[in-house]
Image 1: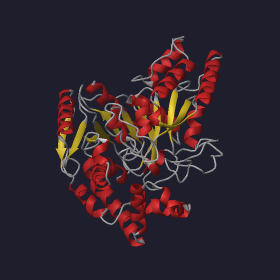
Image 2: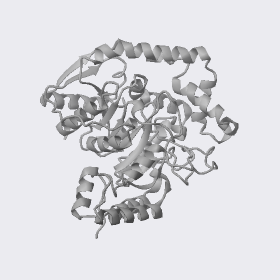
Image 3: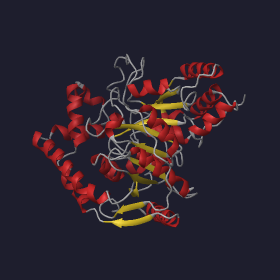
Length: 447
């Protein structure tokens, strides 16, 4: 049976092909592995023989009538910070590369296995998930699939690239300040950041206990919804389908539209026009509370403080010479923060959530550019100063909604011939099912 290409295919379409006998898990897995062999930069570890064995078992189970989920037999990738039994959880770092292998799968990995997914390997990431461009000096560059001179976005860089190149139908990633949505936007695919508490973070190397969340990058909103339901801690009740007509979409005009580049701005305005033409009620709304973000984080962020505490507790800072120095500098900011600085951040966060909630509650969702810019070139971020500036800009919009503890999607909004950019659709806290239903409607309207 000829191999089947994974690129741009949804999990639902692959599941239908498997169910009809049009393909097999082994054929899909060989297709993924062949693509990885041609271009391995998205991966830090490829588990080819295990993947083939898992695919063969999946095919045998299917012949016996056992299909655990639509993900059964489908190749997926997992970010390098998840515990997989027998593998070192390096989190993209030299400092952890000689750590003992994990004894157990992280719960989210166990849930993917129980659903029948075939894991083809571990993916490239920014060291310790602490930058948003997807650059890691410990590994060869992981280029953007649309322009090899540009960054892929991070920190779940390889997750996004593996999906965009057809090396996996889904990449499992993490998002602390945008690490799912940024590579989704930069790679031209879909990324979903759930409300933090819906998916356990056990078994994932932490960046910030307060802000980390785990979720999928894939080729459609339906793929993300399917995976989210499989990895969530509690059963997910599917929201009834929605249409775009009548949706109330708020466009924040404060802070998140500052410095938007021409390509992203043009794509965003075109996208808003298409949603309006489809019947959505698009309204620009002032959210002046967002302007407080630079002042709130002037002495450091929640992630700075919590990362420093985590790395100190684990004794990793004794190996500081093995760190990416840009990442180390961000962790060290946390060491200069006082207990009062940290508590002030938590207080300011609660106040900001309270100030934004009554405004956003008037809308079904907020919509804005996922990132204010298209993916920068590697040579534009080659020195620490330019890296810091573009990294902060890249993370700016997405990090706001981690701070507000919201669920959020990034959907592709580029036209043919344009560099990739993302439309971020933001839902209310714990309203993930409704957001995914809205996202599917918006995705259909933008096709």
